[in-house]
Image (cartoon, rainbow, N blue to C red):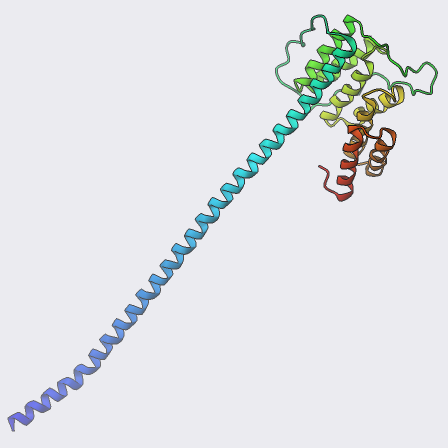
Length: 273
């Protein structure tokens, strides 16, 4: 009898403990599932973080490449400008002889003020067209010492990138030597000085004056090219296209003609900057 009672007690105990055990197993399963889900989330976060870091590294590499390309482009532009200026200086020396001494650049200039355009009042009136009476189409063959020295001083300021000051010096030079051997060169570089500071109306006057007075001069093809680019800078697109298209017709085979064709294609493709 006692044995039967004990068996019943044990059975009842097992019946009571079974739900508890099942509940514990269910709780453990849920905890394991939660831990597994957290681990999966953590792995996803780590992967995402790794991807973000990889993208950051790629962006930094691309930025470094872009900066290097920009540096190379600026250097190429500077080198090309310096070579062009040096070539002009050599041609001037060959045409007019070696300058006797140089005039020092004006003192007191602390920094370049190229952002401030030169006042229009400082500009001499445009040269008369070649067809007008008194127009000079052929400058003297040889420049005098004073002319070469004054021109060299203005040209040195231009090479230094002080465009406002070079404009003032070329204006003074043309006032002193309006029909000198180096007057066409001075008119061209005066236009370049204005063009460099985006003073397009004054630049246009000088390039047009050079074409009117000295259409057969060595600087004339470049003046016509820059005239077209100046018109483009003034948003005169139709006029710019017409001028650039005329450069190869008027000066076939010249470097300016080839450059004008390239610039004209760029304008028509909308890619000229």
